[in-house]
Length: 360
Image (cartoon, rainbow, N blue to C red; front, top):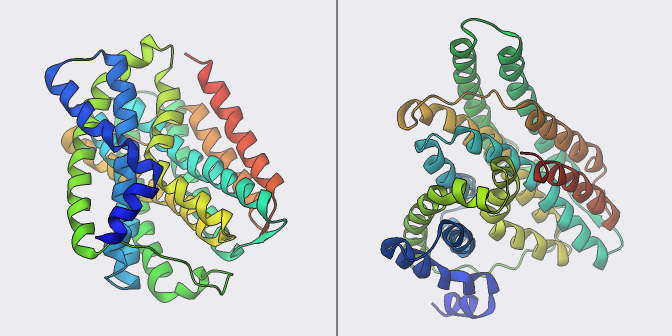
């Protein structure tokens, strides 16, 4: 309990938790506009993601490496998952696709690039496990191939192309889930030594007691589900009033808000010269979104969405995913980093963001 109270006082992201009851009250009393609810719900999601992340670490610390790693992998992107499911249920399939692509690109370019920049400004050269980075970037490249195939089929096919693309997407989704599960077996069991840190120094852990973590985990998950529904309800109207395209909201805003807690952890680790942790968080989150969340959305769409979702992404999103993957693969293959590599990753991400901001 002492550590929990201490973290509440010392962690600024938790202070935003005051927006959670504000959003709920305004939603139930209809006391704010769509734009206000859109902004407030974004601010409310950030601390909820932080609570969820810390609670997951607290539970995982008591369950052993294998179960703990599986728990972290499963719940690591629960915030984005809740938003995606809500949007899918309301038929906002284009928003879901843009958010999936944006989450992968944001984590692999913006989060990783910012971590490299922050760490590089304090340490001249930082080392990390290049084998881990290579495996993660290889998985992202496989995902690019998996998404490009149905996209190309959708562009060149005629007649029953929608049905054909749907079947292809469903089959690829199953395959991606199998690859994800085998990846967990590979990284947590058979070849766990491949993913060990280059640093011999142990990582400082300030985890919450397991009973508090479980309670916080449940409350955070419920609140995230409610606030996500409020956010999705107002996203279209608010984005239009604010002059933002749905693609920009999905690709940039939702991934940054959903990954805010993970970003803070990655940046903090980089400042402590624990770059392996930063690389693991950034690239691991990207891989999880691509191999687990994306195919799961395809499967769930057959049960909760007005129409099934396929893996045919708009051409621009596919190329952004491909170029992001190639950029990460080219800049992370040495096992060494400087601040300038971070600048390069952020620059590529900024190009994508600027493009989507000025597109309808």
